[in-house]
Length: 253
Ligand SMILES: [Zn+2]
Image (tube, rainbow, N blue to C red):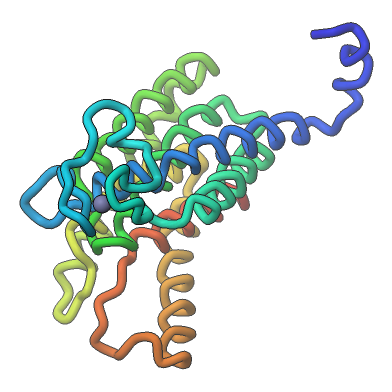
């Protein structure tokens, strides 16, 4: 660290520097979300999309096929507008870094949030939460939280992590099996995975993470109904509400 900054940085409030780093990292992650979401938002049956949805030309091989935000052939936009995903990524990761800057699990939370950005975009695009993505979020959470618990010398905390995931999984399975439930099994799996970080944060967070998504979802449905953008029987994605609820619970923990 340059000497001139050495005297200045410690004077900053503890959360400011992590918040700045998180915001920049979130914006960078958000920039690759449209391409990734476009590839992962494949119709049922295929793991990923192999051709442009507009012109049918094959997706380029290599990294460009995953992160390009426009089709190289017809120049149609791939995935959601990049400005939306960059701003969302900056807010999501910046908020987490500011709120949890002294938490040893911050890297795990940020890693899960990046996968969550792609999951949210894919669910909005095609009402699916692909297993490989949900599994990636689970793996990042399980490995990241284990490392955090061991480094912090609190391995016992992993029990609450597991209990949070198991409790969330059980509740979502019951909800999905209720007659007339619109909960898909992708939602159940994501709910269970999000129980990992919520469990780390403690039982009040698990509870908040279970309640907030349904409040948020209800609010969005009411607004969309009032604007006549949807009908009562329109199937809407729940993934973004699950992710936003868990994110808010982490900020409030
Ligand atoms: Zn095209």
